[in-house]
Image (cartoon, rainbow, N blue to C red):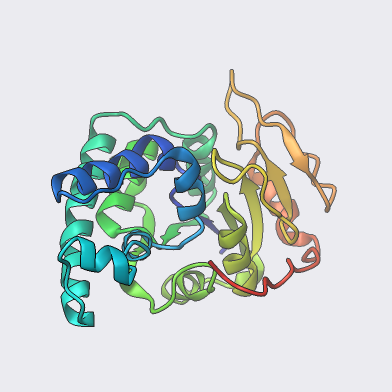
Length: 268
């Protein structure tokens, strides 16, 4: 049966600006770290897959020495784990408080796919509790229970490596030729394409200017009544309407794969 696989951050909700960034900064304050990422700085950090990995980018020799942090790898892993647990708790509380509105069309399209018997999943390199909270907030607990949820440290390599999507396909028993991913970033797109998956991109706050070569369709959202989708690139002539529907995804599946995105010389 066909499968519809969503990324989480920037796809289910535009989580980075309203959720992850303030959660990182509150964590830094609570741990007495002299760091407050601006929106401009964070626009670069989001290119690093995984929250712990973003925090680890702080651990330069000068920063470690100035803040009395462990210098050995095991000690640094323990510190990062403490920071990340607290950051995840802060972020989850923001989700529970309704601070992160769902992106248009996600709940509608997921319900349509569920009714048609499609498999549903979320594949993300963010922490599993955070992803689960966003999913339930976006589609409701009943529909969320229909999803496979694959997140966090279940794979060795974060996006743009394809590991999380390969893992999701394996767990679902899904054929990549009949699966569609919804992503929002160039790194996520490269991960999905490397796993052999056709990808629809809905751009988000921090990804609007990225290169989406290799996507089957690029839009500003999936669209809802009162918030219609705008097509930004349609290389396969899918021609969706104001709302992306299941038959649009079926056309994506039946079209050839678009040209693959370029391989960057250096990953973030």
